Image (cartoon, rainbow, N blue to C red; front, side, top):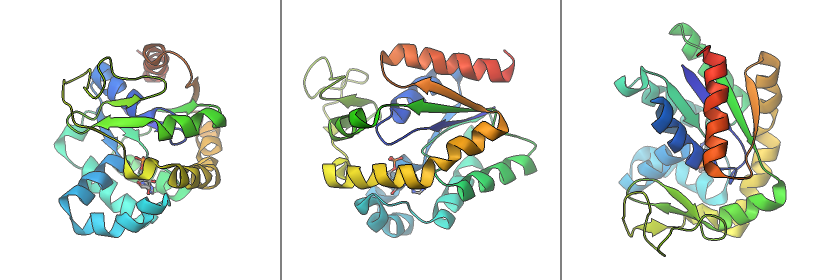
Length: 219
Ligand code: AMP
């Protein structure tokens, strides 16, 4: 079982992917997290991606595709994956379906989290992430219960992503509308797309997404 999370930056993909992975047992694969880890570790991959990420542009397809192919070959991905932030272009989507097909697998569901455009900027610029466990909060909408302390793991290592500043965030939204929204029609034509309202209670949104996955898998 393989599931893709589609949606703009700030739509809540990261938060929902963590919840869905917990509830379904799928392995969470986030292309953005993989790039950020490569940057932190100072690897060649991180160096190649850095300038694109700093501007809020997409990293070239060949680099992203190679990185994801390597990741999904790992043993923990054999039970199925929830893809977060990948694919982001039609070419990435085609590369993914090719490799899955070769392994007798498929994309079972694509969950498109839709959120009004005005809300997205506030969501991005208010976002903080826990360095320790990856939990995501928003200082305007979903703050931690105690300031600066992660509700999930108790760590005080909350930080704002460097590409969540307003200028880069605007470019990321632009890039999303031009390069990634064609994927919505691509997957709609394939009959795997579920549109989910990404505004409202986080747990209810997770519930709707898990239901949609269940409907597609025939559970
Ligand atoms: P994210 O955490 O998903 O918002 O990704 C952060 C940044 O990583 C993006 O702004 C891109 O520069 C890069 N990135 C992540 N995933 C992809 C992808 N599938 N294709 C191209 N660039 C990506």
